[in-house]
Image (cartoon, rainbow, N blue to C red; front, top):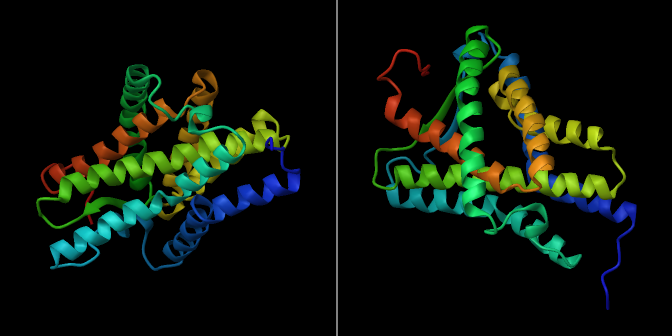
Length: 255
């Protein structure tokens, strides 16, 4: 039997369920965290937001198990999206998440990361200096052999989850629901900013702008592949760079 287009209500409900299981829930969590930060005595820059923390201090093998479990379980919504696309006779290839153009994706992603990375650091430092942002601690893992591999895996997981769902899947479903391109762009960008709100106003604004740029690039290239590459490189630079430089350079804020 040929696949039949679901009703608008089913598409809407499906989209809400995917978001509720992934980055929509993260947005609500970040909002609650932000409210807690702004109502806490002291300025935002005097508080810290830690991204990759130890899950079992003093027990490295158990810690590693928790880290890998967290990375794998965070990708389950991507598997769900792949299944939903297959159900309609498509695959992740329809949003450009495949190995069809590896070198083009790599080159474009590296170029995007170079531009956004430099401006992003400057914006973060300025936002924190003005008191709009918490001090972001990209990693607080113990000095064990698996530290850097886990940081790289965590970065790639973030990139795959966010770009597949917030750009590829969400824009496809909103288009099927009849949303205008401009409204869908705003929804995607605001969602991206929302789940970074735990970092402060600066984190929200910076990622909202990044969301606008990424949607524009996706529509121009028709692929999330370069965005996954760019996001991976940005997070690897942030996680590994912090691990190598924290406490050794004066310009990098630490708690």
